[in-house]
Image 1: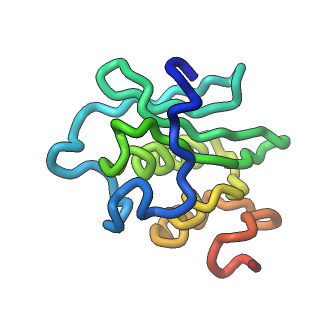
Image 2 (image 1 turned 120 degrees about the horizontal axis):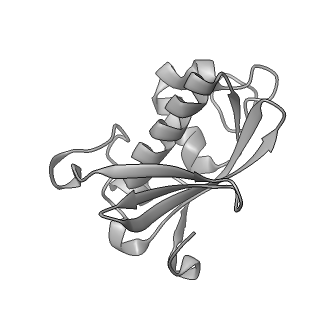
Length: 136
């Protein structure tokens, strides 16, 4: 990911990205254009705002399944719902591609748990350990 990755903050709960509010996406000052790209070489879905990398979602591929491992946001973009928008965009794209997701990232699991409309994207055999209704 471009930029200084050691300054990124890895998210472990929704509160880290949205100040405790829901992860429903852009509101108010956060209505900037968010561009998501798949950096396959590094295994990171990258979110950019205004041409600057804002966040990343680390993944790996296992056949037709994508394992979503860790979500990180640069400090200057925290609290703006960027991570939630990134996760939603990635899940939307996986759905379009006919792929499933296994969620091992706590932030992404919390997002999916609070947005049941993404349940169909979860892999039925390996949804992830923290996804509600799918083991624990």
